Amino acid sequence: MAGKFVITKDKRGEFRFKLVADNGQAIAVSEGYNTKAACVNGIESVRRNAPDAKIDDSALTAATV
Image (cartoon, rainbow, N blue to C red; front, side, top):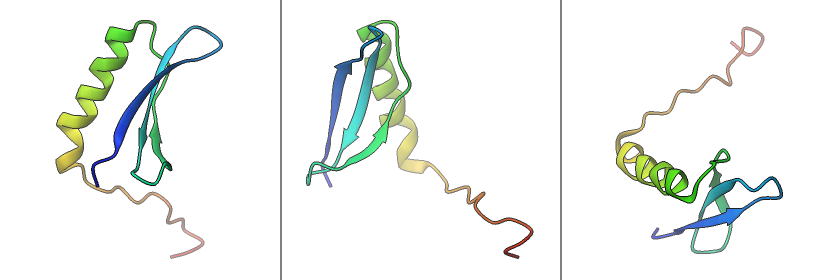
């Protein structure tokens, strides 16, 4: 999956990025950033940290165990 990062500016004037799959489906959406540079730094952080990211499954509750 190659995918792409798409940067947009929302109604509040904040920059956000979406990670979009090849089929056009959004995989992840960021928080709002005050500057485009900060948004690009957020993308770079995802690129650096995601390859080794673990899955923390907090979906289990006492009722389902």
